[in-house]
Length: 394
Image (cartoon, rainbow, N blue to C red):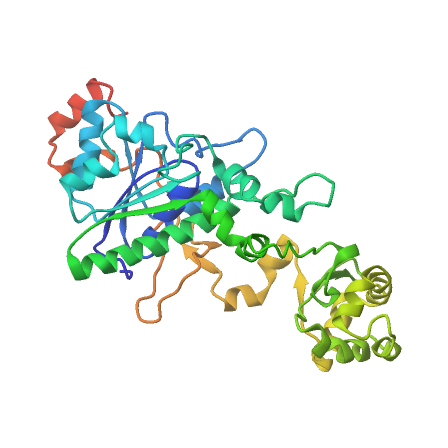
């Protein structure tokens, strides 16, 4: 029983951005039917020769029911349409041209079910001239929206994206839109379309930088040799770890940082007296701070900084993240039932004080619930066998 108990979701999506939406809706208690073509979601077993993405697939697909069907055929599309007739939400990140050919576009399904919330997650925008251009988050969110350029080195190659970063960002934006549309439907009885694009999600994610560029103010440089405030930069410690400094108000924290690192003379050095001075002299200041920070371990600096009121955070490895008790205290882990025993997995990022959620199980096997879902639609076993014989279901 979750906050969305009783909500039915039909998900027709592949890879990450669309299924991630359905994954969180399932976490929150919705009955999510994952529809896959007979060729399956390509994220199943993706790059299996070089990497194991099974846990990533599970994160975005756990708790769903799986229907495998040739949805591109007339009969298969009609079955998916019947599911949408009974659904509250339809989620897709497939390209709109193919959906329209199958009669699974918003206009067609809304005509059949006026209460339907239809969520479209696209690369470049549903009504863009490039609506059917292949995207992925590495293309639309990361590269084209400008993030890769900003995190790369000046004059060097662009920065790389971690898997699923833009997809999960766009998915959470889609979830906000879906829940707002459900609230609107409760008041009016009307469904509507929710539109999210990876490109626009990327633009909002770096909205500070783009807003500054739009006004002509330019983009704030954050590379060491041009850094405007090295009190919000990471520094390497003696044990090889890194500490991320968090002192956005540089002038406020500068005196106590100088005391903490036992360099009181820095406070009155004319090169470093103000935030503007420190920005102008970022190179010598960086050299000095780097040398000082390398003299102690991260744990030693942590004790000193906490005592002196210097704000910081550890730059953690994956092993450190998994072992960090603060992650558990923040609710970052969930317990997932599995046949071999419960497993610790990543929790979706929202909790509800009065309606807690719990995982119902791992991602379904391909087509695992096909017969069950068809029986609920009114098919008998003869009809299901007929679908198999005609090659519409596996």
